[in-house]
Amino acid sequence: MDPRTHTVLIEIAAALLATEGPQALSTRRIAAEAGTSTMAVYTYFGGMSGLVREVVHEGFQRLERHLTAVRSTSDPVADMALLGRAYRMNALANPHLYSVMFGGASLSGFSLTDDDRQHGRYTLTSVVECVAKCVAAGRFADADVAHVAHQMWIATHGLVTLELGGYLAAPLDGEALFEPQLVALMVGAGDRPDAATRSVRSSRRRIERELSPQAG
Image (cartoon, rainbow, N blue to C red):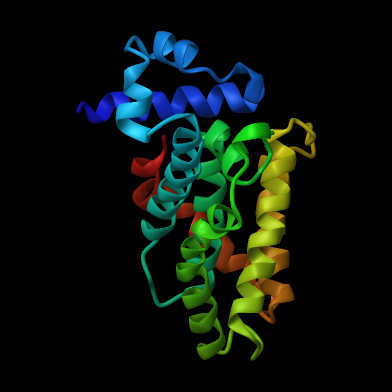
């Protein structure tokens, strides 16, 4: 089996779900756009429902690769800000996958189970660990680290979802709003405004070195 065909089928299914909805999904159409036979969908995924499920899993795998590219440093708040940047970069690089994995695309008859929807929670592990380091360093207030990590995720997801949906327009577009939001999140978690600003600025300088190879 060619792993490239596996990836192409996932990309095509995600794009169809995100742009045309579940009614566009058929083994014939997906195979035709992939330049392969309809049997490929069954060979790789066991059928259409398996393919949709794999779209979700692939989306979280790509997110995890972005997040784990962030190195742990002596400035955990900068690390946290870079995790936020990694999350946004993954969404912008994989918009169709992102839409499907978080329910932004209608799945209709290909509905996900509760287990499918909870599948990607492992991607929060690095965020929870980073929050704990920020607390230990005295940068964040002592709090339930999982709760703080979820607050970071929810806020970042909200901005990214609006950005991908085209709801944020210049001069208040995603690029303009994201960095101030990062600073506000760090301050909200207990960091000093001046220290948070320096750390977020520092995280920007690390993008090319740590995150650029992960794009796409």
